[in-house]
Image (cartoon, rainbow, N blue to C red; front, side, top):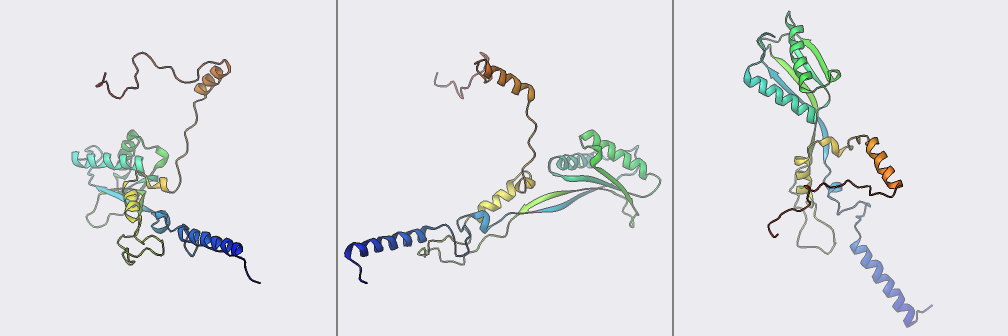
Length: 226
């Protein structure tokens, strides 16, 4: 069966549309999004054990000023980025309980919940009688960049190069404040029931539901041109 001129033109137009669509398709042969840097360069989030060892002679002497600053900074970092519990491991001996009490109370005073403080003792190894503080944090990383295996001057295949988006993914992994956010978001804080009741009551009465600005409040960024 032969095709007429109109039928041939329709078929040619359909083939051209399908060919153009296949060239601009964002999917590769395996069905993956080749334009998505998160697919090509995924960020790996892995647990990382962090520890701090401090010299501590007796509970009544406390810590040296430099070690005290290190301890405070370490505990603050745990509160901000730590996961699970923070541990206190002290050398076994007559001062073990007092030493545990000293560090535990300092952590609690810094804001660490007592149920997240784990304590224990260990046998003294050689001359190392230091106290070890440790916790688990998460670290984000990606595979190294620099895959220039494709010819960037050849674009007939309409696909991206293997290195596309790698630097951006590296920057995200380096700058994210809490890598756990890349795994799952934090739980939302509960809503303000009292404020919700006020807004709903105003809505029922036909009153404005937004907050009222006081005369001293202004939304102007600058008064230079006034």
